[in-house]
Image (cartoon, rainbow, N blue to C red; front, side, top):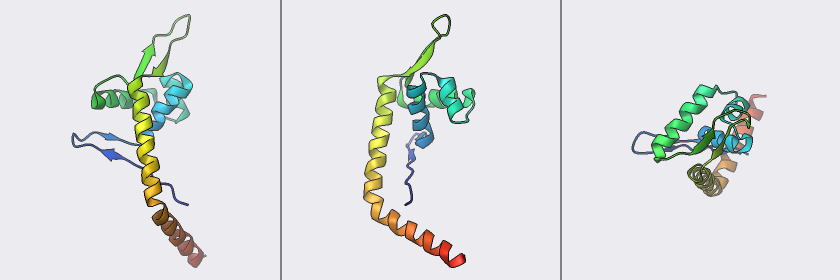
Length: 118
């Protein structure tokens, strides 16, 4: 079946989409912006710019960072960062439930079209 991808466009011109949410999730998992970016085949600079953009959009830090050194440094999600993930994923699940029948119908059309060409 098809997957539904949600991008939220705000009146300000800012947006929130699956790539940004995945980046935040991976920062939470890896404890590092650099490792999160690498796991997505993304440059550290691009990841940092996306995080900065989220912070500007939502008016607060979404990731907290600690400078390296003997202990190693790292990054963690802030409560705002966690709330963005939770809210986005809840919207995504609701939209997928609402569109389930239509997604199945579209998937059937794709398979039917592919079979006709074969």
